[in-house]
Image (cartoon, rainbow, N blue to C red; front, side, top):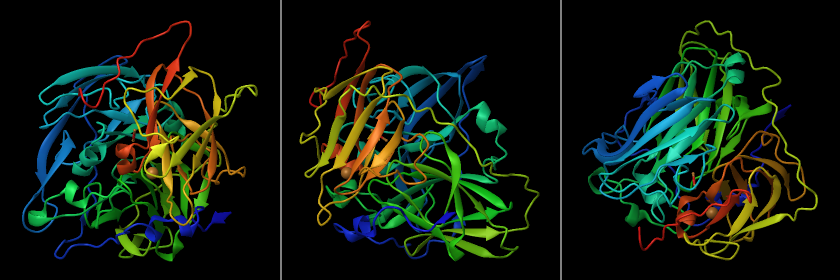
Length: 476
Ligand code: C2O
Ligand code: CU
């Protein structure tokens, strides 16, 4: 079966709402090969332990003709390198801040303790400072990511470039005969959009919109007009929704089938074939595209809506033995005690969550570590005035149980940590936290999050009570 729609309803798309901006390419920008972030090298490896340094830096990049654009990045002028971690590894990371303001290092999709290691608002690293964290990787293969998360300037810092891919690998993935030759038949695709002002500079304040910022120019892995040289029949694309607000509605020329193999935090149980996929802020979707219908010299385009996003230039195909097995992953579905009440979370008008604005000092909910619960997450917006809010939880993955009482979408059966919720919709999630800590949950339209559509949960163990030092915005 091949699905041919976005699953979400057209009337809810961002393009129908609130000062939507179409994408365009500024004059004089030449097509360039898609930048593929190099793999981040560890400082040291010893047995099962691995050491890294991640430094936030100020830099500049030649994005447009004329002046270079000032950007921020992790060990790179913009975005970062790709960190590749193996399941079971014990990882030590030195977090260095060489920016003129405080930042934090949030591991979106990584199951690490909160709130310090997790790197949300409570873990500031001040300018010139260095901090160390460590954690053990204990989750299935997936593309997760690292991004800045200081409250309330997450959006502004991500806008400058602070986001990078963190790939988790495991033995099970190693056995799958899927394309996995990084930079050859496997490409990360970080989807972003930006607007450039005088002298080609970013100006977050000038663009600010409490509904979420839409940039006018696409920026894919930091490349404005990218092409990919296709040298194998099958190509695996790791899409990451890295924009502050924009949803990406992706489809190819000739409606080539995209076979989705993985979601946010795991492979899907079975591959799902689609001609259209939507990626909302925070989400990751991995697909395999088969170009066997094309020949050397052909050019195939990937679009978002009707805008040409990436050109795929077909070359002579090298030998390609990859196949996509029918079974990829077996998700664990922890049992939920039927006597437990269902948790209710609402994303409301005026950037509120459960009718409150975020406060760093307030713990909004508590859940027992290792105990699965149902969360009913509702977008209380109306269809006329509302929008899709992608709901994200730190420090864990979840599985989708239902949407307004109906089956989840066919591509939602793996582990996820970010889920688009439509106006008027309630999505039921099965949520279990593996580790202790205080964690944020919020809308991943980053301006909504910064404006207060965010809350915190404490994950506790009654036998080992803990006290947390919660920062305050004023005392940061
Ligand atoms: Cu990617 Cu709290 O976010
Ligand atoms: Cu939102």
